Length: 163
Image 1 (cartoon, rainbow, N blue to C red):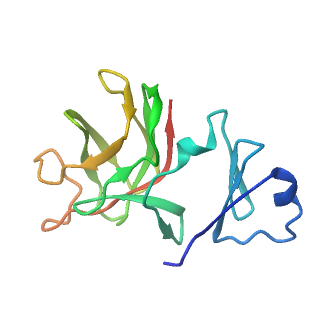
Image 2 (spheres, rainbow, N blue to C red):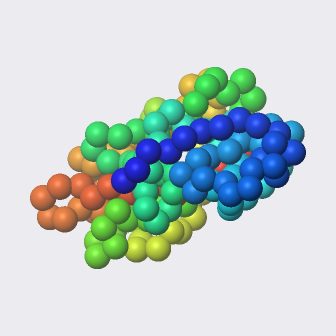
């Protein structure tokens, strides 16, 4: 795994880069877009909704978050506006092992499948979320079956959205 660099600039500044670095995440402040190297991701949602506190570089998926025994996906910043749905695209860190993961936020609990290919799941809490938001994985729950028989296998979060 390699190190990822983050850069905040305008669309014009990004367009002036002859060859975007594939290990740099570019936040385009005037276009509501995020670029990973030369690949652009556009959303009508504000770009800061995409940020999580701790990310990792992955050779296949670029910037990912980990959900396992030791890693929680904490959304960066404070959400004053309520969120009614979180969408995650999950994939097993070991493509030979698939199963379910149990994700939690406070008392809310969600059991979702994790496959060998990135698959979207939607988390819709019973009441909208605001404030500091973190998605944790409960690997001790018997419904969490993404494991190798001894230890939990990491679920990679390869993309995420909040609505």
